Amino acid sequence: AQSVTQLGSHVSVSEGALVLLRCNYSSSVPPYLFWYVQYPNQGLQLLLKYTSAATLVKGINGFEAEFKKSETSFHLTKPSAHMSDAAEYFCAVSFSGGYNKLIFGAGTRLAVHP
Amino acid sequence: SAVISQKPSRDICQRGTSLTIQCQVDSQVTMMFWYRQQPGQSLTLIATANQGSEATYESGFVIDKFPISRPNLTFSTLTVSNMSPEDSSIYLCSVEDRRTGGRNEQFFGPGTRLTVL
Image (cartoon, rainbow over all chains, first blue to last red; front, side):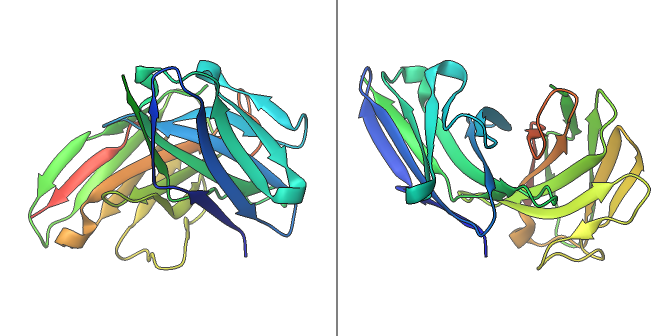
């Protein structure tokens, strides 16, 4: 069965520090991978996606993620955190077999402190 | 990307009543999805709604509890029936817009925050 695991339900960093949010997936077929961000009282916004092209994917707001098949990982990083990055981040997986269902991880709440 | 609106944005309802949530898209899309996000939880897919066919429900969700309509390519409704406090959640609709997004990429509406007393 396909699944997504996000390690760490809460991550706290200082402003200007590296952000690393972890995501591992389980899939028997080639996956499509996504990172979404949810700001308080808002819907989800797509940060970036992997769809079998380049393994290093750059997204909006300075975020990027690297697809590592050998580690079944798709960790999200940002070199320097900003206060405005404080939000909930969701990793999601879909599959190239045709059915468009998104399976979400449990989410990681990122706090950024001065 | 597609612009999605939902009505109402929030509501407080009494148990035993029903609420219909509307999802409107500014462009024609084939696939629309309805998700539930319980307090402090992740998103769970309720059903997929394609125009011209019956909605496809995920395990644990049934049509009698969550009837869905999809009358055209820009609109869908989700009804939460016979509500109980356990139905208190954020309900989000999403669309797959292959004109501007890739395959399997979904765009989300702002959500409807439902509280059942």
